[in-house]
Length: 432
Image 1 (cartoon, rainbow, N blue to C red):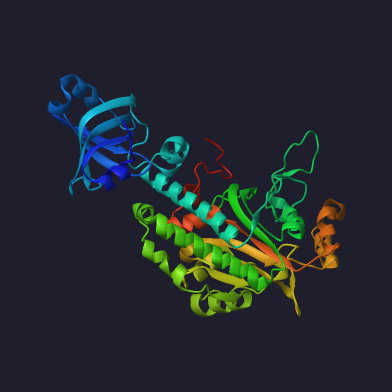
Image 2 (cartoon, rainbow, N blue to C red):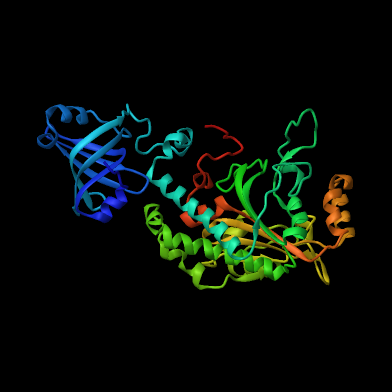
């Protein structure tokens, strides 16, 4: 007996098929049992008649409950009344694994579903999200390799901070202090561009942010790139190219999953068809004042509320550049002739999904990097390996980091970033 997926059975459309999966729904009478079977590809209604399978077998299937696993063989035919437009009239079946009162029912709270995440992954919603997520990861790899980048891996245990000391996770390391979980690969990526020139990674990053918002995770997946000889304009171009490629692959391969989630695939079409708008931080403040009636003092970082207001003015990601130096990381290059700003940029997703990419051209001046580190209260001896990159053949370079879960949240139009990953980790959740 050769089993095929439910989707393959539907594509076959007629004749005998053998499928296997789990009971998604069930109902019936004393003569006919209707089982909606699901697998990773689709759902299909299976009609089990007492006359076809016999009284003994019918008594067995009459007791089947949601999430029991089954194999089914029968004749498939088109039926517009069925949930997915096809129906299997069952000739044989086997209960492989029984299920007893599945704990997830209708209309349960988000927190309960997080507690039951190991079972909620079976839902059609999470199956669709995880398929889209897989396509996103594949598209990231495909894009960077197509652009001539090498995959490179940096350590998860690190001895320096990159994005701010207040968000570091300390790790007890054989009795030693000063070891942290990686916030970013960047300080360990920059040394490698002098070897490979163009590199990328997809790896977990960790931020000990005391935030309970729908946008933050303490453990998330980070797609990062770094390139020698790259200008500030190049970095923005790579970010735009990556997002366009991701959306293109999702629309090509996962439109059905988007529809399952209630996301109109056509709403993402402008991302492919339009160039991303690019405005400076100063221009962003002017737009916020004129179009959103929001007054923001120059020099303050854009908060979630300001990013949201800007994002609703565009139907593609928006690139904001030349942020104030005081609110950005020590490694960002000062704007030539304008030392109060830096060659840093944020990509803000439409529809209120916030920053999805942050990047910059890197500061090439050894003295300026030292000055910024000292201003932050850092000890230069901890950064000797990084400072060496500016001593021996430094070149213009830059890179960015993309929060993959934020991209998945935006593409899927999710209410919370917690649904963009299988087992979310937040300030208050570390189980299951």
